[in-house]
Image 1 (tube, rainbow, N blue to C red):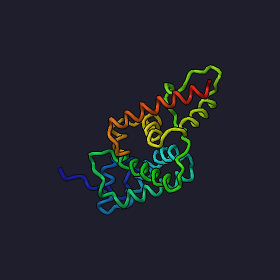
Image 2: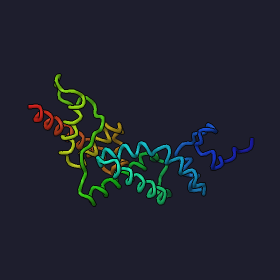
Image 3: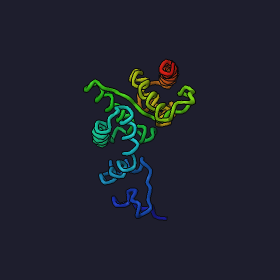
Image 4: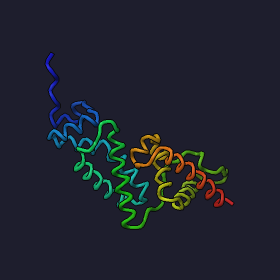
Length: 195
């Protein structure tokens, strides 16, 4: 049986052809000269990257700039991608690093508004969902940046600790400790606010 021909650039995940090539295959196509395949990667992951950047920076315009910078950086350094990691985790690491750089340059790593699990919220029958989100945003803004980042990635993006380690460059045990400390701090801040 003859080998299957490589997809043409127009087949790189084009919905009309019904193809949905895995990220690693698309990366190989880009590295092989089919730069159009990178557009499929951008289309596939842009919304996810933008959501993470918006949560980390608290500003949609800054987040959009950071995501564009991250995709340019990813394209330039695509040869460094290792297939042992999920492409999205590798890409999110670039996004997080770009957010850190932006925050350092502009000295603002502000309020986040992730959809955190209910275990972080203090029970208050009178509080509306909007009130709780506001209280949570205020409390999150008081966390250290590394703790905010850990909370967003763990509960907002629902990444595993291994995926978080790939994204942040920190060890799994350090990340577990950050999440634990951040949750404890959030409980304290939220209970103080309700007192």
